[in-house]
Image 1 (cartoon, rainbow over the protein chains, first blue to last red):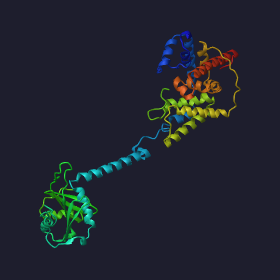
Image 2 (cartoon, chains in turn cyan, brown; image 1 turned 30 degrees about the vertical axis):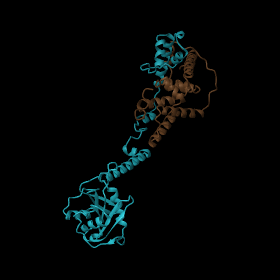
Image 3 (cartoon, rainbow over the protein chains, first blue to last red; image 1 turned 135 degrees about the vertical axis):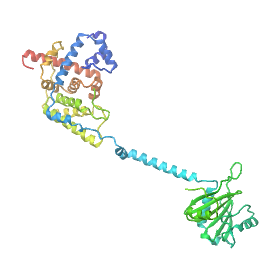
Image 4 (cartoon, chains in turn yellow, orange; image 1 turned 90 degrees about the horizontal axis):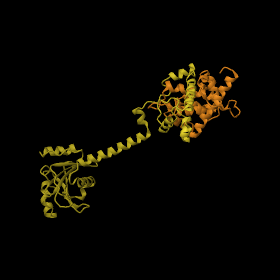
Length: 264
Length: 169
């Protein structure tokens, strides 16, 4: 071995030189081997190592051990399966979290998709309808359509008109009150299935103050109550009753009005 | 190491479990004990695999087998620590080595103190490169180099002594 040309590390590497040099991946080892290539001492060492390795390869495998070698399933790692993955607590937690997030997202999306200008106010008024007793109303026995004049003359409420679909319903009572945003709300109680009507200002653009119109009838739902809302001349009318959208829709159909926009 | 664990972490049994047995044999110098350690190691691997906790570490089987071999040999009669004679290896060595019975070689290697025993066994398996042996034995390059070089010289001296004594190796 040409030790005079080799560093200490290279000499150390040559002591550990691979017996089969077919593939030497280590760069430092390759360099040391190329320097020692052909050196008599290194060739002797390599021949020595190959001879010993040949004896090691000749170590017989006992029959009992050979049986273990043929058992291919002995240490087979359990195969990757969706079932196994699903049982992993971390994966399970992430999946549940994603489902909840997706559920909230879908819920909000469905709520939003049926929103219209004034839908929030309409929902609040459904809560009012659910809690109102007829005693708080001024008794009025008339056709609902005739109360427009009353609202205008007594309270100065312009365009607080009951749509023709509900104009012929007999009333039990009515009142005008201010909501928590000081808007004037007209409430009418009718005999028909203890239905209630609400008239309230339509929502306006916060910047321009213009009325945010929406076409046709829209439905809102709150605490078992359903409301059919229509906007006209800056005033929203809502017919509210305890029940489903189907119950209200039948009144609109009978009246020959345009079918409401489907809701959730 | 050429191929010990496949992509799935499963050892290539055909090639490397044979080498695992040979490693045990070189470490213990006794076929019966080697088989026992070999089987215990595989049982442990199978148990861990069944529980899904088989280490992904490439050399786990050999590391496990090494400690089992060292543990098994602790109960044996321990050789007295003596300074072995050393001779420079010479070109005739391969022809001398060819005459050696594998069992004799295994007895000689297994009599070496650890970590030289492990270093020689792993090196002559011709299965691992030096970096892998360093990782398996926790040795430094200079230490591995010293142990292998000394091992060669000691084995050469033993061969020479055998030949000069005229005994069959």
